[in-house]
Image (cartoon, rainbow, N blue to C red; front, side):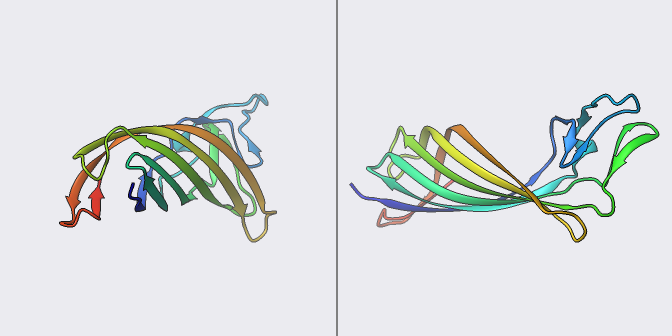
Length: 169
């Protein structure tokens, strides 16, 4: 069976979601010393991410890929837990950078080199590091690991006349 190489470039714009009760070393506590959950848009600004992956389709159905993604996390400098009571980074607002490595193993139901639409499912293994840096603060890093379930479909947009190359969405 032939092997097809895959290269993927991607980027996006991210909007913060969820709630948070801390960021880095700051716990969000109100004036009664109780932890308060803040909406994500009160803690983080919108941001961007970029990444790339390389993979190979083997035996017409099995695709493995390994990739890297960078996200610039933009944190606000002051976190208001009550109208006149909040927390802030002092003496400076640190930089938050996230670096992720991904490994995915997917099974295509249809052969993507022959089918217009090729549904797939699989597993993903993800590891990431968030680095907190600044000029006057101590640098810290947090490591996270995750396991994911992948599913979706590839839509073939173009095939080369010799059927050795294709572009999918």
